[in-house]
Image (cartoon, rainbow, N blue to C red; front, top):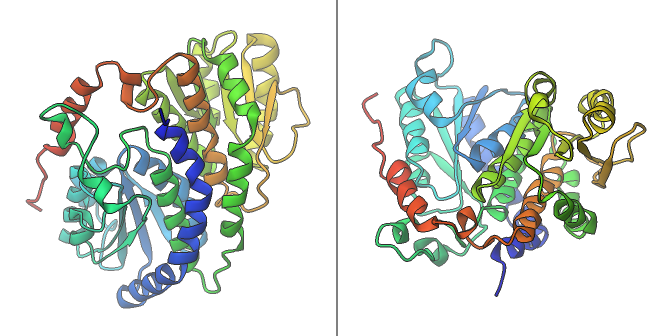
Length: 382
C-alpha cells in the first residue's frame, strides 16, 4: 500500500522546482500590477492551521521587501483587529491563505478587508474556490490535480463531503507550495528581485529528505512522552507546523519560541524527550548554544539541532541542513524536517499514516470538523 504522506513529502523537490519555473514571471507581473494600482504600503497575512504557519514563516520576507507586515489568525482579524484605527486602508494588501479556498474564517477575513477598502490577493490550491473568486487576484499554488480536490477517501455521509485535498493525509506538499508562492511574491515586490536562493531550495530539500538520520532519531524517540519543537524568527512558524503535524496523528507535540521555551515548556521537558531546535546560523542558534547543554546534561533530554554547520557546543544530535541562503528563505528547507520526523514516529508506533488520528475514529472526527469548520457561519455584516 502506498504511504501517500511519504509520497507527498518526496514529491516536494520536483514540484517546487516546477512551481518556480512555471509561476515566477506570472507572480512578478501580478505583484507589481497590484502594487502600482493600489500603492501598497502595508501587508496582512492570515490563514488557519498550516496556512497560519505559512503566514508566520513568510512575514519576514515581506518585511524585507519593504512593507510593514503583520500576521493574524483569521478570526482574530475578521472579528476584532479589522476595527482597529489605522490598521487597514486602501493602501493595505490582505493576503488570505487557504489551500482548499473554502475556509470560512478566511472568507470572513476577505469580507472584513473589503469593508475597509483593502486590496485582496489570495493564495490557494483551488482556483475554483470562494477565496479565489472573492479576491482581486489570486496565486494558484498548483500542488494538486483539480479533479482530486472534489472527492475524499472518507466513507461517511458527512465526512465524505470534506473535500479540497489531493490525499486525506496531514498536508506537507501543499504547505511548502504555499510557502514558495509567498516567497516568490515577496521577492517579486523587491526592486531587482534575485530568485537564486529560492531556486536552490528544491535541491536542498531532496538532500534533507534523503538524510537517514531523521528516520533514526524519530524511531529512537517514538516512545517519548512528548515531542517539542522550538525556534525564533521566521522559523517559529516551522516549529508550530511540527506541533500541528503531531496533533494530526493525536501525538503529544508542543512548540514554543526559544525564549518562551525556557520560561514555560522547559518545565514539562523530561528525560529522553526530544527537543528539536530549528536554528539557521544567527541569533536563534547563539541562544540555543546556552540552552542545549543544560537540557542534555542536567535534564537528560535529547536536544536535536537543525543547522547548516555542526554546532560548537554540547548539543546531543545534529541534523545538517545544507542551505546557504538567507534566514527568510530558510523556512522551507528547515521546515520539512518536522513533518518527516512525525511521519517516522507514526510509522514506528504502527499508526495509519494515510489518514488523520492515525486511523483512530477518523470518520467521527472528520465529520465533526466538517460541521465546526466548513459549515460554520460566515460573518458578512461589516
